[in-house]
Image 1 (tube, helix red, strand yellow):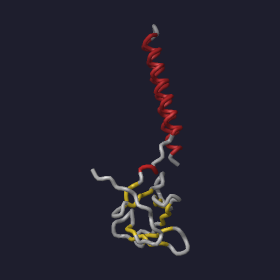
Image 2 (tube, helix red, strand yellow; image 1 turned 90 degrees about the vertical axis):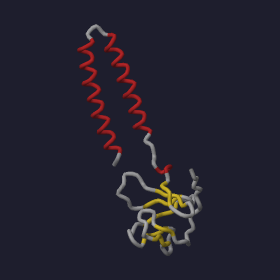
Image 3 (cartoon, one colour; image 1 turned 90 degrees about the horizontal axis):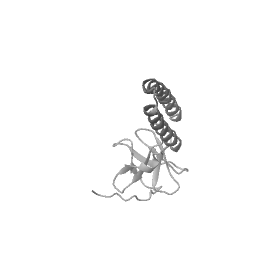
Length: 136
């Protein structure tokens, strides 16, 4: 498998648009931004000079690309992982594990398992609401 080493983006150069194959990125005069002649999107080069980021986007996460010399590659480091959601999910899994362990050991196992399933359902619903709210 070929490795694609990133090249520094030249502000005076002309590049193909990372969104569309037929568009061309041209530097916007008196700014450090690029504009596509087809899709009318505006792109800004990050401070390090290796990553180009789309300014106006409809995606919940900003899209960014790296230039390899021949083509754009989607920058995987731009996909941020949400640590609060990881903590909530870990706490949920641990809580469900310990609740099921307690239900198995209790003399009223069937009633306890029903209560646990209701509790887990509520937490799944709350987790879904939290996830939807975090996407905004």
